[in-house]
Image (cartoon, rainbow, N blue to C red; front, side, top):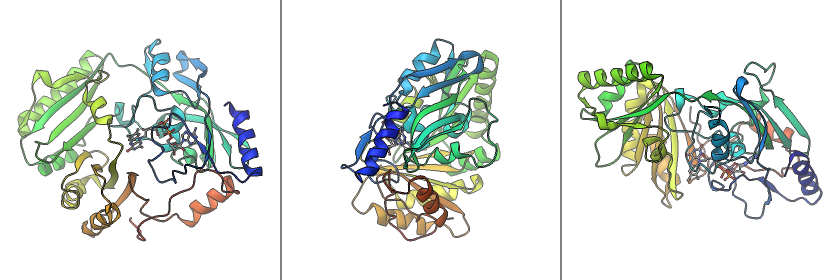
Length: 373
Ligand SMILES: Cc1cc2nc3c(=O)[nH]c(=O)nc-3n(C[C@H](O)[C@H](O)[C@H](O)COP(=O)(O)OP(=O)(O)OC[C@H]3O[C@@H](n4cnc5c(N)ncnc54)[C@H](O)[C@@H]3O)c2cc1C
């Protein structure tokens, strides 16, 4: 469907009081904080390139364009969309923007919020809104592009997206090292050193802790970054061999492997001050001893992936309660349970403004009545 067809579909849904859902490839309808309503009428924005000017490093596409298609189009000009989110390469750009999808080891630690310049959306009244533009500095007043980025289709169905591209680096390597020291000591060192490049620490039960770092640039920069990693290793009992470097875009690279998430898993994202990262990891290990943890040292964010169980809400409550009171932190459910914190009055009022008939995606009721700071 193009934008005018999406608008017509929403107007007829209002007339018949039908709930509608914006859908891309449909790979993550079970994820995030919204109701997965099987009875909703599906609205699927079309794919395809609208305009691509390689010299401006900007592409405008219909929201149903998949990341694979986008990558193939840009690769011909030596360019790329700088993030590859969790999940599948068949994900659509509209869904990636709608869910503000997280990505492991993203190039230069960029997020989709850094890359989306403008979008077109159809609100719950059927009105078409064109937000932002095609240049980096284009927002005055309220930033409605970023309001819709991560709103999970609750405020509008995204039909077109303008994103910023990057030149593909000549070298794009992931360096992998095994941490032979206690992981928490490592976390502190990485935080103290301000983790100078995109890094993740992976902690899985029964396995040695692993550090991944993405080294990109021309030959000189990438090998200088690799040198930094080697000197980290020499100083901090970190083993790094020549075979521990792989090309980030290869299917067997850690980036591709980390993107894979079991559909049945419970996935949480917790965040604290980077300097409290070790405390957060300890609390997660107690509450979720079987979980795979991915710690992002420069953000202080921790991704917790564990098997889903019927008592998921109680386990999350235990985790929240076990964190030291002196540690400010937030927890978001990415997949497999209800949202934790209730909607604020502001959230509800924004929802009523863009979707007065309540026909777009609705938020699931929260499971725990607790405010997490
Ligand atoms: C197994 C798995 C695990 C994942 N884990 C994570 C994770 O932990 N964190 C994370 O951020 N992402 C995660 N993703 C999401 C993924 O990164 C993609 O961003 C994406 O959301 C899936 O693309 P899709 O086209 O299949 O989306 P869909 O499954 O079609 O839609 C995903 C959500 O976006 C909404 N939506 C889709 N298109 C539009 C649109 N045009 N306008 C408005 N709303 C729309 C849908 O209603 C739905 O709620 C995961 C995906 C998979 C398959």
